[in-house]
Image (cartoon, rainbow over the protein chains, first blue to last red):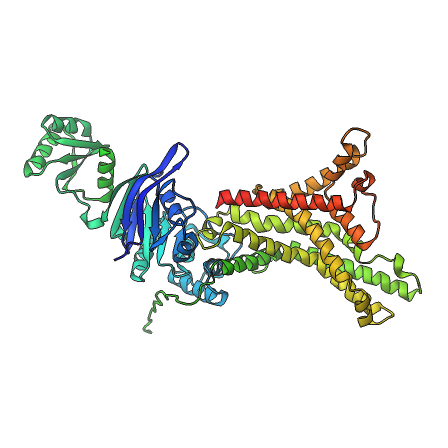
Length: 301
Length: 294
């Protein structure tokens, strides 16, 4: 299956600040999570995929097209939901989404029809003739999603789509994103909320400080040679004790990752936690969540 | 109790034509015209543009009324009555206010509300976006200059002793003179206010700065330009508002004011050059600014 995105040696800097550093990645069709802390290079990566900025070095193809040479064609096949505010207050949702479709080359009559259908899909059929300035944050996020898919793109880039939403709104947005995959639209969704990625994605690309940390299927993320531990207190004391016993330990706040293949590792951890009166909250073999894996990998780098 | 059924219409794929950059450009034009005129917007967005259009149209009615009244009281020599050239002056403040409203309305909200991020993620290029905005600007602002002239033309044709069609036939020069003068007004004022709108974040502030530049330029030119000091005559060119009017006076062969530049010895072609320079520099400035924003 042809990857939706292929990057080779992708590097981009803003003067002295390196936003992306020699990124080599292939992203398959489906729903992909682009994860990383703020400033990891996610938005820069999106802007390069859209041909809005040119990489300092390297090359990138989107849906088989070279972004550097065919940016216009790529943008016709891709939808983009920016993270920040991007809606005009004085237009109705229906008018704005139809306009977004026309900007992607859809004829005006068809753009109106697709605007109605897409707003229905995102749950705004009743509100579509209201002015965007009167919309709540959750409704605005849905309109942003609608404008990104109204022109039937083959790939959608969603930049922090659940940002600013309450728990219910977040759930609904993640459900919508999950459904896009079932419509045959590939999705790359960026987030620093890793549980959102775990819930919606089947592939994950991790960036940290502009470098690729990992690209692979989500379910294969766990490293069974490690034990992730979370304690209530005295994590550093426990970590030091385990290091003295010869274990490789990475400490991140109240959590630490201990490398050790056999059951003796767990036994040693329990022993040292009890000795330091640290209060064991959780102990899991393999990275139990994307967040822990991300923290562990970033710490190792 | 009824059994309700929820239908999920799902998502419809699209395999119809895609119009590319040209389709996107046309969409920008349509949206721009609607935005300036307040169409498909809240009612209060319509008040200012439509009021200005109505005032401009009313000025033509006043002129036609003058001609009608003079014919009723038996004035033979109608050459003294104001016609096309003077009409530009009569509603010039309306035209300038409309331009001061149109350009900021076209450019600023897209930028301040972050909508450019959506637009430029489409096949739309910066050049096509600005071309669309320019076409929308010219479309709506030429309305305010051409509609009153058209109303005057038709009104004078109806009042003409020679008859409607003979009047139109003998005044064909109006068909190029009015658009030419309109182009001068739009090129100078339009590029100036557009350049301001490209950097200012509020429509009202942009309009005020534009009007301030016109007022300050006129004031400086009349105070300093005619002093007996080196290079003072060149300062008269800073009265930017005079240049399309100087062109207008030459085209219609009328004299409506003592312009500082004319007093300093400059002719029409200097004014044409100033208009061209302002238009080119303004266009370059706006394009450069939006290249960075995209």
